[in-house]
Image (cartoon, rainbow, N blue to C red):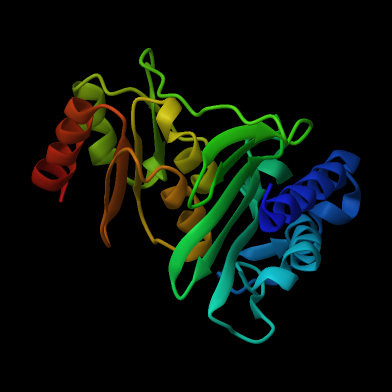
Length: 242
């Protein structure tokens, strides 16, 4: 295992131990973070853990603190808790998202589901899933041909598009953790997001799922393993919604 991937998984393991403690300090509201959202104790403590493990491998750019130290040609874009509102609300869909870039190009990414321990990994040479309990057991990430639902993040902000998707029987869920939803894209019918695109939200997940049918512009992200579904939703979004 590459040293960076090993360090990233070690950070996720420590964060999972942290969130399982359910200490009141994790829920404390602090000031607005670099990304504009109110940082909670869980965000800041997870950020500190990630910085300690990952800073030897590059300059860390985090949703909570922005640049943590001097910039360099190798950067690590970090969302220490993807779906922190879910964590605060005891909704079991939240994780860690991080992507290492060299001169702006992604080289390594991990998205970890802290609830069930799933870890999605992509390097220049490998793409696989493992778990926090068994990080050296590498499992293939296979497309699920039986998927019945998609994932539509920020769906509530687009009621007109919801109506069109429902009319076309394109069922979805909106679980509220964008990086996780991007990582799980091979398992669902499609993954759709419309909204502000911040690097710490999308960088790792986009790199993980880059092998699927894919579009990203300044308006939306759409990913699907099914070419027909991809084109159908792309047509809906671009011709009927925008």
